[in-house]
Each structure stands twice: as structure tokens, then as C-alpha cells.
Length: 355
Image (cartoon, rainbow, N blue to C red; front, side, top):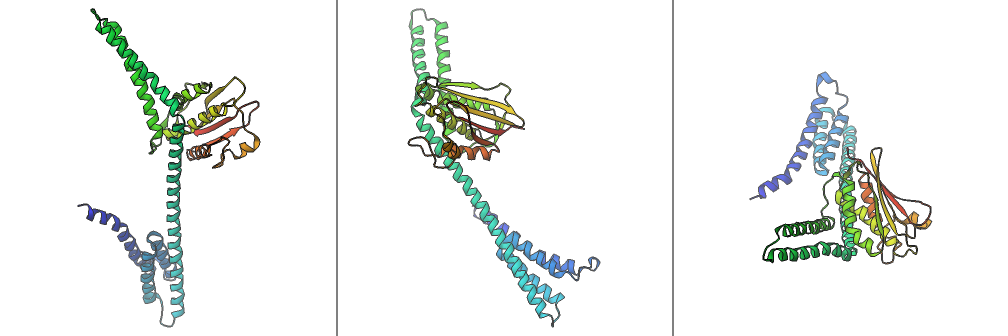
């Protein structure tokens, strides 16, 4: 049923390209022979432009057709029998111009396909890294989900007890039911965040509230922070400007920096383990800083920390920061490590403000 429509969709560009290959030599001939324009001495340039345009738009086939038609028109109207060398030179020039245009068109198409393949590969790598990171946080996330579910069970039993008495206490039962709704909503929100970060398809570019996005990431990583005795502290102003971007990918960058900071403090000897997430608006951009009090980075690690497959963690793949930098740069920002005095490391990234 849809076959004729599909065939028409595929053949329509070809018909257009060959139509251009026929029309452009005709237009060139008309302009060259139009008395008012006085272009009788410039037919070669007009016909070569027709060949170049046809080859650029349609490739080898339409370019060859335009070359044949231009040669025929040029030989019939502008070449005398004793000017055969002129015709040969024109044919060679037309073939050369058409070949160069068709080759450049093919190169541009190949470049676009390569760029599209690169974007798809980067998106796939980002998804894999995101899922692996969620796997590392699975135990902590399970604990975060288990807490509200346990609250649902406890409050459900309490509600039944308040209703089972000889004189049911409706007020207490209503409060218990409200707590059940609260805990169920909390568990649902956690699961929704996990699904958003784990899904393969990215969200479209949109207006992103960074305070809200960072808060959702911290809700997922809070259990991991407690497991390693790390205190999470935020400095997020209420008037922080929104940014434009892919919400899930931005959250992936924040989650990667937060998890790296927590893991960096896992082996720290001092007791003060604190991860500070700070955001501030600047001129036409927003800057987010993640600072830990872990073991820090040596100068050699700072130079290579964003290189693909380079890692300072045992068992690490070395892809998280590299992919995070690509995500930030694709959003028009910059991710960097900042030198600091004392223990720990500071990473910061900028994103253009939403306008």
C-alpha cells in the first residue's frame, strides 16, 4: 500500500537533479544568445557554471548529462568547423569541473555521515557509562528506595490498627494514609530519576533548572555518600539562571563528578570528608563547581585526567571524565580541573545561560 509513496520519496530527488541538469545548460544557452545581455563572448563560463551546479547538486550522473548537453549546445551554436581544438579544450574543462564538483559533493556527504556516526557513537558511550555508573550505585539506590517502601508498610499496618478498634480513630488513620502517600510518592520519584538516567534516548534540548537537576542527582548519590561517611554540602542560589541543554546528559556530568569525589575520599585518612557542590551565575553562563577533600591529583594526573582510557581508580575504565568533557563542550561550555591549595580536587564546568 505504501510502496508507491516510498518509491516516489526515493525517486523525487533524482528527478529534481536530472531536471536541473537539463535546465541549467538551457538557461546558460539562453543567456549566452540573449542579445540585450551581450554575453556572446562568454558561453564557456556559463556552460561550465551549469555543469558545476548540476554535478554539485546531483553528483556524477546529472553532472555527466549537463556536460553532454552543454557540449552539444556549445558545439552547435558557438564552434566553427575549423575550431575543433577549442571544442576539445571545452570538453576537457567541463569534465574536469564536473568531476571536481561531484567529488567535493561526495566528500561533503561522507563528512556529514561521519559526523552523524560520531554523534551516535558518543551518545551510545554516554549511555553505557551512565548505566555502569547506576550499577555502581545500585546498592545505595536500593537502600534509598527501601526506606520509603518500609515506611509504606509500617504506616499501612498502623492505619489498619487505627481502623480495627471498637471505635476507629479516623484522624490517626487519615494521618497514616497521608504518610503512605508521601512515602509512595518519594519511592516513585526515585525510580523516575533512575529511569531518566538509564534510558538510552536523550531528552531534547530544553530549559534546564540546574538547582532542580543537581538536587535530583544528589538524591540518588546520598546513600553512597553515607556509606563512605561523606557529607554533601550545596551552595545553590535561588536566583541561579537556567541553562539550555539536554537535562539527562547534564545530570550525567554532575553525577560523574559527584561519584568521583565520593570515591576520592574513600581512602582519605583525615576525618573531614566533605563534598561541596556550588553553582553561580556569571555573564551569559552558569558555573558549577564540585570540590572534594580527598587525596587530590598530582600534576601528571591533572594533565591527562580528561584523556580517554586514563584513570586513577583501580578497575576504572577511564571514560567518565572524557565523555563528560565531550558532553559539556557539545553544550557550548567547558569542563576543567582547578588547582587548589590543600587536599582534594576541584572540578568545574560552565554552561551557557538560557536566553
